Image (cartoon, rainbow, N blue to C red; front, side, top):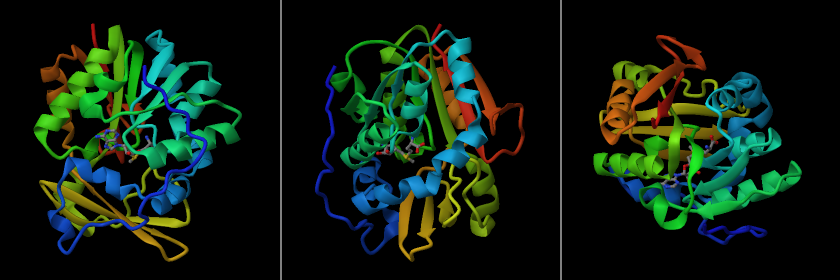
Length: 272
Ligand code: SAM
């Protein structure tokens, strides 16, 4: 397993670069440029760890324990919220992400919480190149899977998650309710919901079509950032997971079974 310990933040250009036509940026690799250091620094104000952990309760811990999971690969570590929560609960966690900025922040956050993160920089499309070993569970949370723009990339990433799972392992993957966004468009004013809980940030959709959801994140200090994401319809994600080989998929809306119009969907996909 390739593990990197991050004690210092990497230097990187601090401006997001979407060029002259931001709505034409529909590129899976672009996430690397979107999580610039300044945005990474503000990410925790966006998600607000305390409010998020109140919103989630023990939902993920319960699911992992119900499936007998001990080892967890967090493939979208971000600033470390779930990795740190799971470490505190005694799970054996490896924390991966494609963004060195995010991993550096996560490592620091974990240290502030008295935890040592075992990190690995890895892109989902080539996960098995950098992560060796098998896990009881893979988690891909916080609306991360939406960064993949090509269907081929989504299939490849899911297949890579499938491959690192043990027999009877589970993948837990969430995404924003894009059906609502696609059907109602930018008329939806707030995109925060129960994952992005921070009070000093406003999240609003700037552009939505079947191939792009561009969201704006405005912070109270006047700074503004954007993420360009692929709007995943719920039924499409279910179908892809099945086609890649997951045998059973249970979907939740805002952490409840059968919720019809939630802010976020969570899918638990089983490898039997
Ligand atoms: N899970 C965290 C949370 O809930 O706060 C972070 C969510 S953030 C929206 C998405 C994360 O996915 C970022 O840290 C980004 O670097 C990572 N990411 C996006 N595309 C990726 C890819 N192709 N391979 C690996 N990581 C990727």
